[in-house]
Image 1 (cartoon, rainbow, N blue to C red):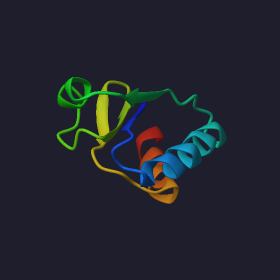
Image 2 (image 1 turned 135 degrees about the vertical axis):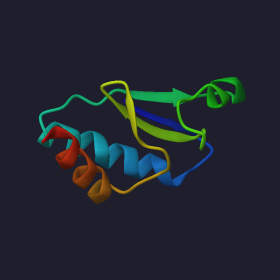
Image 3 (image 1 turned 45 degrees about the vertical axis):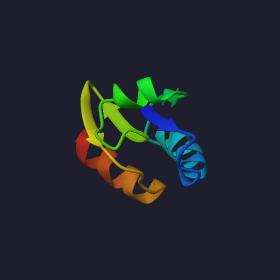
Length: 78
């Protein structure tokens, strides 16, 4: 699950690329758009505008690139 908000414009492209990359890893990405401050305050990451959760565990708590996403997921999937 990729969690993002519109507050950070850089995540739009990165999230789109991560969704494509997840297909290459045999995963189906679920993107959750945070649309208000309450949702951001209750997000699993202290950053509040971005996070990646896999199997209930927060694996990225700040915006990352597609390359970093692939590296993290390759380690997680081992």
